[in-house]
Image (cartoon, rainbow, N blue to C red; front, side, top):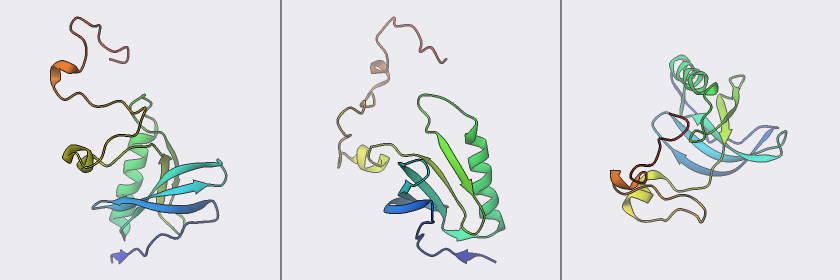
Length: 130
């Protein structure tokens, strides 16, 4: 049986600051992690059932051990009572707004190249992580 999750109110550890966005599987909030003393992104489920809990766990576990400068860090997976995971919060805008030109990236955030030829200077060595 699928249960529609109510708006997430936070926990003793995580205080919800605002709703960032939503997708087919869940809702993402900006939250304050009282144990870490920092703001985090917190992803919850829209519908709670065995399948969506499994998918949330699988998503977290598939990304948890990856380390790369272009990937966010994952923090906590919680499935007792509430079902959510937390991750690094980064400044920026959603992809659709950026592509439509409705919003610009905050100062200090690198702009994506607009053409393939702009990705790296001609003759430049490949990035060290390749």
